[in-house]
Image (tube, rainbow, N blue to C red; front, side):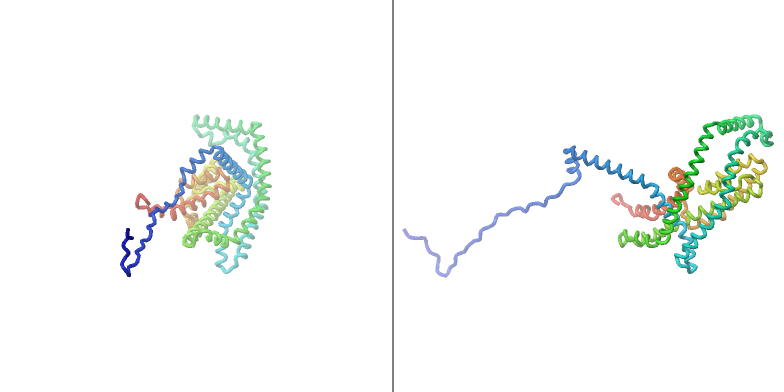
Amino acid sequence: MTDAAAPPPGATDAVTPPVAPVVDAPAPRTRRRGPLNVQALFQRPLVSGFLATIGVLGALLLGTALTSIGTILLYIVLAMFLALGLDPIVRMLERKRLKRAMAILIVFGCFAVLFVLFLVFVLPPLLAQIGQFIRTIPEALDKVDQTPWFAGLPPDMQGAITGVVQGLADWVASPSTHAAIGVGIVAAGVGFVAAISASFIVVALTLYFLASLDAIKRAFYLLAPAHSRPKLEELTERITASVGSALLGSVTLSALNAGAVLVLHLVIGLPFAALMAVIAFVITLIPLFGSVIFLVLGTGVALFSSPTQALIFAIAYLVYIQIESYVLSPRIMNRAVSIPAALVLIAAMVGGALGGVIGVLVALPVTASILLIIREIVVPRQDLKITPDG
């Protein structure tokens, strides 16, 4: 037996490297979210019930905390709105080359003088006229059927008015009404004392907000991305200018309205001039419809004195309403955002239901700000969505 033939001289062994088996790389694991987590929670009812209980308790604690500090939040919101309302006056004084601190001092000094004048010259006759008005109501109701204008009415109308007047007289004379009036007077006195103590807090916060309004705005701009800050700054300046103009304009128009009512009552000789002027100031804070409401109320009160005086008051006040609508309001409210009349009424009712007079005063600028945001942000974004995928 011979060995296998040897390779020829000079030849090298050809070594074939081993071929590694091809192994598929493991696919990356993807985390499933949504249905898997929800399903897992349902599979563990104890955990899901515990988390739901924690959420409900957290919501209750948050609601309780907000309720307990609701008064403080109201002070902060009111002070901020007052600062925005006074800021246009401060800026006007700054354009006269006054420093902002001096301008703020002048504005608050003027308001302090007006408040002192109100306490000295308006509040005493106002309180006296309120008492006189309450004492006069039963006597005025008893003498309605003896007035000349009542005698000139048809018998059916006289019977209807007599029934209404008799019902009002019975309601005024009832002990429950007297008790309710007494409780209301006590509550009003307590509220007045509380309002005085709260006014110091609101004034201090208003001073702080007014002095640092620019710094607050700059800090607010830093919360937005850098590319959005110019648009946010422009929109914020427009909103604050609109809010300030709306608040200042509403108070100015109401003050002019109250002054017109006071002058008309003094010239015509109607009673309760100071009381009706204060009522006119409060009611005409309602935009668009406040003057019409007071026209009916003021004419009705004046009717108990004299039909002639009531007619003169109605005509004169109606003339003032036209002057206010076409001359005063366009010039005073020129920078405020235009709001549809229906939204004005809805905002006034909602604001009055939530915050009383303060709510009515704040409702208009808040509605104007919301409309401005919708027009400047929401509507342009919706206009860019020209395909169903958006």
